[in-house]
Image (cartoon, rainbow, N blue to C red):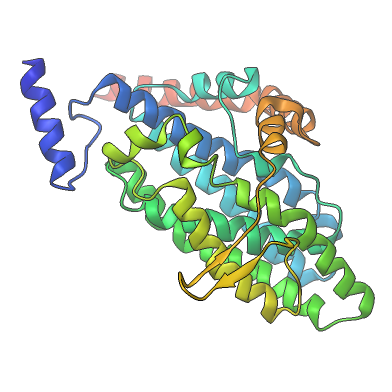
Length: 313
């Protein structure tokens, strides 16, 4: 029977069809999805922190309202993705415990501080822009609930990227001080944004198998190149430079060639020693603990309603 299940699974993947929660799947496929979707969900939730920090300091009421909407979107994305992860047989409480204890990770990019208003624009343009490049690919992932969640998330992320670029366009047309703020933000966020796609394919533990299962459709390095090719011209349109002395356009390949990424910095942040790692997790854990009474009340209410329905029936 196990062989028959494996054959059917392989046929479904080969036919580019979706695996659904009630379908049989290999343990490795399930565990890979739990790790990847949970990391994605954690990143959306932790990613609210560096931007929420600027809600009260946004320069206008309109900017404040837009930023509130964006942060609210990120919470919704986390909800979609936690729900998708739960279809794989793991509870949300378990996922939170693994995040808080360090057994599951979130994107390294969210461990950097937001030092100026330009950073909010850089996050929208560079960080969310990198997320979109990755997430468009994930709309075609082989696991149904993850694929469908990504369709809606990508639509909302496109708003986030436009919001960020609009902030930077305003700064690019501003005073010398504002232009300097803009360039400083790009200088600090450029390389961490390139790191968002993960290590080189040759150093990635999961890429090869994830590609075979069609969980991933494009490799880390190919996604990173796509991102650089689309983003460099946007930087030039802003009148800004990219902090990479080795960056140049290769006429033969049609790609922007870029310099070496500091992978020591990447692994330092991933392992919990980045600028804001401890602050991010401490804040997340405190909010989770402080909100325990809300979850308990919701469960009690649901049980009470269920009991009433049973009595009426």
